[in-house]
Image (tube, rainbow over all chains, first blue to last red; front, top):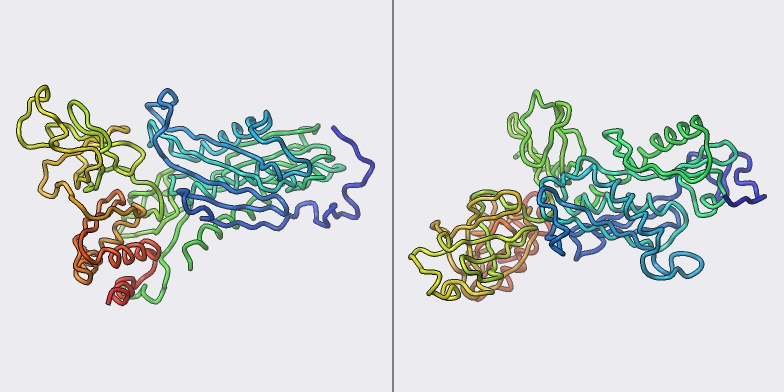
Length: 237
Length: 223
C-alpha cells in the first residue's frame, strides 16, 4: 500500500471539501444511445461511465449457449484517454477481472431462466476515471438494464466505502483510492438487502469492516433515489 | 378512466417496487411474488383491475406467447420447413405441415415454391417452449404479405398502436387510405399510396405512447 505524508482528512473535511459520509455530485441519464435496447450515463464527480445493453438476443458462437438459462456478457472497458497517462487499449488483466465480478453482481437480479439460449450483452465504457469506476459502472448497467426492459428483481446500487485515519468514508475519489488505508466497493439490492459485490483492498479489522459496510448501505439509499428519479424522468416529458 | 384524464402521465413503476400483498391481489404479467408480496419486474405502467395487478413494460424485446399474431421474415428454407426471423431473441420455425395446405412430397417438391428467403408472412405462434417457437399458417388471419413497407416499433407499444378494439390503427387506415397489419412482435407492415404519412403517425404513437389523449393528437396530425 502506498503511503503519503499528506493528511487526508483535515478538520473533518476531505481533500475535496466533503464530509466523510458525503457523496460527490451525481448525474444520471437514461436512454443516451438510440441504437441500444437500453442505455445510461452515470457520473460520480469526475468519474463518468456509459452503459449500453443489447438483448436478450441470440447467442453466438453456439457452444456458449446454455439450453436451460440465458447468460450475461459484461464488458468493462476504460477509454485510453480516461486516465492521466494513456492507457493501452484492449482488455487488461484488471478489466477482465472487473468484468467478471460486475457480471456476478448483476446476475442475481435478472430472471435469466426465462431466456434460454440467449445472451444479455452489457457494454461499459469509462470515459473519465477518478476513483470508484467499477461501482459507477454497475449503477450505469443497472439503469441500462431497466431501460432495456429486461425483467429484474430489483435495481442494483453500487457504492464504494473506505477508511482514512480510522474514519469510515464513502464514494472515494482517485486520490483517496490510492492513499487510503482500505477501500471496499459494494453493490447491493436496496429493496432486498442483499449484497452482490464486495471486494476489499487494504487492511481492516472485522469491526472496521462492519462499520464501513453499514455506512455504505445507509448512504446507498440516496443513490437508489437518484436511479428511480432518472428512470421516471425519461417518461415524464 | 374519466377521472384520471386530468393527470397527463400514467402511474410508472420501476423494477423491485412493491405493488401489493399476494393476499389482496392476483399477480399478473410483469410482476413476481416473493415472500407473499408482489413486486414489479419492469419499468412500466401499473394496471389495476379489481383484484388483478399487472405491469406493462415500456420497452424490451418481444417474448413470444401462444396465439400471438406476428409478422415474420423468412430467413432460411430448410428441407422440412422454414426458419423465420420474428424480431425476438429466438427464431421461429414454420414446419411444412403448418405452412401449407396441400400435401407435398418433400423429396420431389422445391420448398422455395411456397416461401422464399425474404418473404414476409403474417402468422401465428402455435407453441413456445424454452426457446423453440413453432409457427402456424393454418389460421384464417395468416397470409403472405406482398410488397409494402416493413417498419419496426417497440413491441411493448403495440397495444397502444392498435388502440381500443383497433380504434387507433383504424383511424390511420381511414385517414391515409393504406392497408396496415400490426404484428405483436413489433413489426408493422404498411401498404398503399400514402405510406409516408402513415409511418410518421406510427412513429409518433411509439414516441408518445404513455400520454393520455393521443388519439386526438394523431387525428390532428393526419387531417
